[in-house]
Image (cartoon, rainbow, N blue to C red):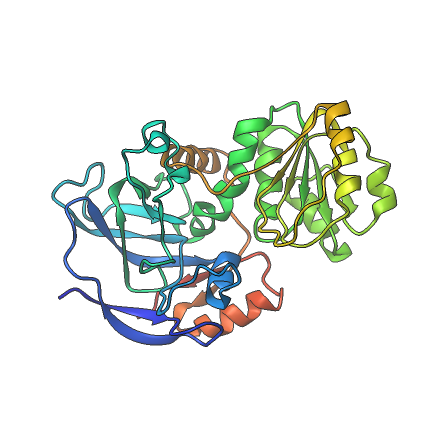
Length: 336
């Protein structure tokens, strides 16, 4: 038996309870990581509440794991016992489909989320396929690195795909995702505009590297930014003035959605055609993309702004996140 301690969601919208669970034998291509830190992401809250209709209970949430490798399967590669590694949103992918073979493992139709039908990181130990356990750069701050493994790659990937250092980039929403987006875009050399509904965040957004700050509730000001942005990254999951935002795109500009907006986004065809504009979205990123992001973060000393709490206060942490009080990512430190 491979008993571990874990904080378990027994059903939707209920407080987590501490239990022992059996992970079973380690498979040949798996690695096991002893959890030191695990970020709390809004996706954990969405799965806890079954907002997306995909949750499976009992569930062990947590998918921004930093810890030390404690076991390596007989066919696992690139990792050794004692090494620090991180595990993010994905725990495995099939490794033989077209997407996996092309290096887009995060788009694999059989990809296994770490927290849906799999035991996640709010536990003493967590497992993944060796491909998805990423060695951490030595120069990175291990205690702060967890949120980079989901939130960080989610905003870094569209910048890597669609931005240049000369680009004018807007980041919509200065929260758990958006504040990291501002940091990455600024370090990349972009001219960065932060959009936030909270005036109390204006100065913080500038401290993260924003050159300009705009209220996302001020449609008139947004309309004055028409034809400005090469890339607009939407990190929030609420309804916005979509017409004004699309109008703010420069010719050939792109609005890229990474926030899980549950309502349909209305898009008029003519502005898209006339300006040759695009609307797109993406999930996290491939293992290589995550490693690239981690190297970039280490090189530019980019860390999320975090609040640390012991994992034993996990229910309090969920309440703080749901109330919108986190500034800006909560990291739970394992204290089993």
